[in-house]
Image (cartoon, rainbow, N blue to C red; front, top):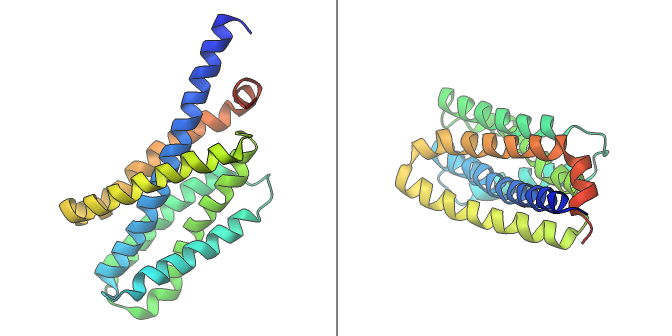
Length: 190
């Protein structure tokens, strides 16, 4: 491999690792955004976290079982759209427990994306151990961002952070998916 090829391989590895890390952070901000909205608009009981987690994990399991031909970018965009539909419904109908089933389905749809993420990126990043390590570290950062953001920014955080993080994850994912064939050839020989 030439010197230029090494530079391109290192650059692609950096972009891929950054993408995986930021996607993990986005998933945490999204999941905690759902939890905070349930706390604010539906119930202030601890059960709201378990409701969000239940539907999230159910979606995650569905995502793990999707065919490899599923469009990951579509799922990522769908998770962002689902979050803002969830927000809109909660703003329009606060404290309506009857909306919980539909709200749960929106969480479920968002949870499909993280499940499928591992299917999609496993084919790009062959070393699964590193894939989990990078994504989980991003998720931990996302939890910290969510907690500090909710405490210090309140509703502003709930409104804008998941969309901003989702857009960053989307742009990095687009680069990664579009150039994945090149990335496979250059960076997955771990």
